[in-house]
Length: 57
Image (cartoon, rainbow, N blue to C red; front, side, top):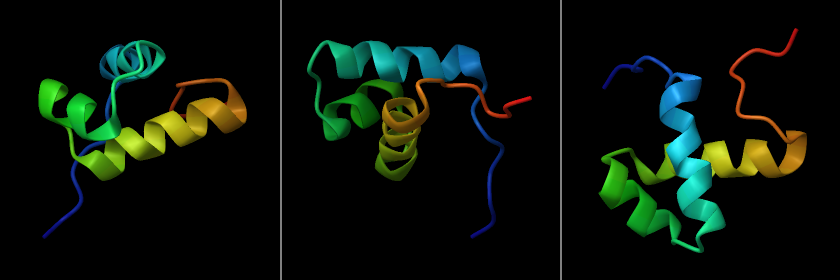
């Protein structure tokens, strides 16, 4: 299985919004149709770096 494209910031925003509303990673994944590993990675990066940007300049 090959790698897919990364999500845009526009699609990452709802992940953080759901997380802030205390939705579980599984619920967010099902709701937004995004793999759990991707949801987890977005949330982890947001907690550590405070951003959902894909590339920091």
